[in-house]
Amino acid sequence: MLAVTAHDHVPPGPVAVLANPTAGRGRHRGLLPRLLDRLAHAARPVRLLEATGPAEAEAACRAAVADGAGALVAVGGDGTVHRALQAVAGTAVPFGPVPAGTGNDFAVETGFPADPLAAVAVIVDALRAGRTRSVDLARLTAADGTERWYGAVLAAGFDAIVNERANRMRWPRGPRRYDLAILVELARLRPRRYRLSLDGEPQEVDAVLVAVGNAASYGGGMRICPDADPTDGLLDVVVGGRFDRRTLLRVKPRIYRGTHVTHPLVRTYRARTVELSAEGITTYVDGERAFDLPVRVSAVPAAVRLLR
Image (cartoon, rainbow, N blue to C red; front, side, top):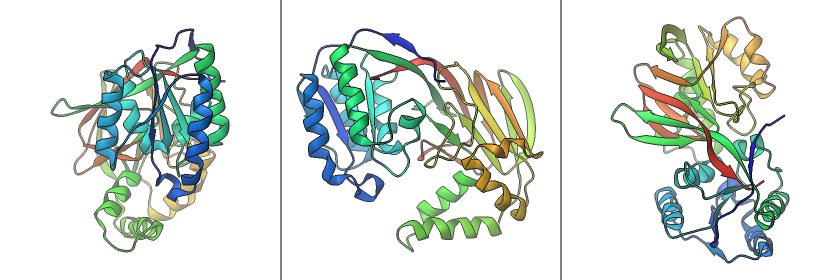
């Protein structure tokens, strides 16, 4: 059961909406006019933000918050949510994710319906009632001090390596590129030496899977950190050790149920602050490319106010 801190105030101002028409391969593209129409039932002006790419989307969200938006709503998947979170984290401006992407892990894990229209109904009800509920975020800090927020999971193992290869490939297009990247990286699979510090306690591990979760799932429902609770002020760390290819392929499907954590090669930890380093790894957070290791991750309690 998700525990939350409730508030009874939503700032005045219009509802700014960030929408990604390509999210979920565009399957909800035609739904946007209905979603905007239903948001207008909150009796506030609705302002659709203009952006043609991720950097513009993030900048538009930051500008909307700076210009006095009373709330920010993101229509899309985890990538769209991730851009919006950079603008509202640590502010009094409440946030509403409308799950319309391939992966909607943050929205679902924080209690929003998986159906976009149902999620908008929850957001409108919260706006009309002036109700918000706070949940935690994770603050990611790079070696040079650059910071980003994330809501779901940081991947720093095999999945991050696959994402990095897929993003470098120009062929094939679509999901087959990711499938090919998996095959290439499976052929190259080897444990890597990670240096971890959990609330200042150092250790070294050889691993192929490393995840730091504010919430339980990533990748569209893969429960990599199954016990993570985005309201407990803690991060869940899951480390999959010296898996060979055959064992990894057997264990990987269990991640959807979260039962992989019972495997003898998997270790779980919980901490407020996690420092992580390894050679040649680029991290991914909420499915988005983030920083090269080393990084520091801190749990920030009640960092965002949700419209639910």
